[in-house]
Image (cartoon, rainbow, N blue to C red; front, side):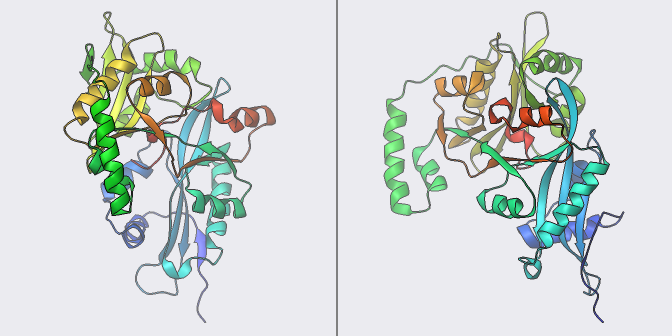
Amino acid sequence: MRLLPEICGYKPGDEKEILELFTRVFGKKRSMEHWRWENKENPRGESEFALLKDDGREGNRIKGHLCLHPFLLQAGGKQLMAGQRINLMLDKEYRGQSYFGKMFAHLLESGRKKGMLFTYGFPNAQSFKALRKVYNAKELGEIPRFVKFYDGFKAARHFLGNRLVAFVAGCFLQVLLGMKKKRTAKSEGVFEVTKFDSRFDELWQKAGQGLHVATVRDSVYLDWRYGRSARDYKIWAFAEEDGSISGYLVLLVEKEIGHIIDLLALEDSEALPALLGRAEAYCKDRCHTLSCWCLDRGQVSSVLQKHGFMRIRSPNRLVFANLDCPAGLEEILLDYNNWYITMGDSDYK
């Protein structure tokens, strides 16, 4: 009699089959070093897993995977543990059979036991429909994407599928780019970061006071998330005359698109315009587009728009699910305008 697939947690050694599943589902390879960095070396704790195992099949037994990545967030003046849902994977023959819901239920129970008060993530519309069916998840709002184009034709071909439409749009963008006044990028005081020292803790203590809901960006977290990552991030910070840091920016360039992965700056400093100027100078001859996730409010979106960025539609949504939050705290977390979000808060880059 053939055994039915079961939902279970992670056991040492499962990572080999998890990576094989990743290759089958996404069509690309991920290294063992990357897997350990993401799931075992996180200073906030090890990831929680829900695996679909089919012992009745030969070879790779792991047919499904879902992960809760632990994050430390500041909300309502307190530091809270939360889990972000990442890396949903199911082999084709196991899709549409309610396994996602069972995996998610298993994961939520694991998260509760680990002291996670809520989960959040950035699914597209299709993934959110599935998520809403299996749990009372709430969509808080779209994650806006601001872009600045440097080559209208290349940008149009990237964002638009239809060749004729892309050509017409490219012509329009090229004309528009030619009409726009060129800004002089001022980046005095900006330096490249090779180490996240105690000055970044001081920056977070100051800048974090004005943020209602945000990932705790201390030096330990920043060193793990960006300093020790295998990705080729460019990291800059802005130094004041006394040597203190009043802002930083993390950039990743992939396939001629520059992604502003993370940024944080004090509102009463020149850090944000200077850091953005350095990022633009770096991307100008390397990219056709510079992109940034940012809620459409506050200092960051204002400075982006002054630098010629425009908001475009985004497929990603901020989705929240309560595990053990008290009512007062849940009210704060359910307010979309309370969140400070960058692409670095996701697992996209």
